Length: 176
Image (tube, rainbow, N blue to C red):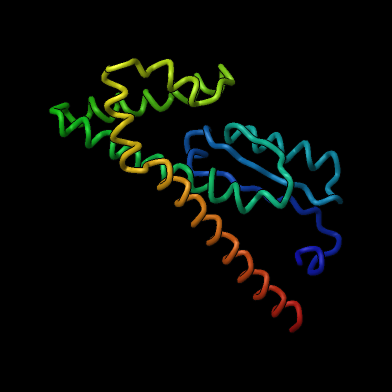
């Protein structure tokens, strides 16, 4: 549709997230087949300044919008819940939130560095009859994983609806 409106344009589609404000975002992008190598390099150089980036097939951009673009909101919800859990057991707010934030940072760094499956890393923390298994049991009983998957699926569906609406509006404009 964009090519139809501007056949000479070189189109790069990208999706980042709010962590760009801390130069720690995850940006996915796709290139139109006509994008020059020079412009590809320039775009990647820009995206790398935002944080990590990765080229993906265009068909994955809407899914990445739901997962990585919206992901910070999901994680902030989890961070808030964990912080409230700390408050519930008597921790001061600043200590609880700092602990949760650093736990997220360390957990993400270990996941990327180890390349192990999250379940393997989780099992390194869970001990028989221990503290962690009690918490995991409650999370499983609350279906937290199902809730997260449903959130991503709902966001993906909404992303597709919005994309279709934009496409229809653009086609109308092009016809006029």
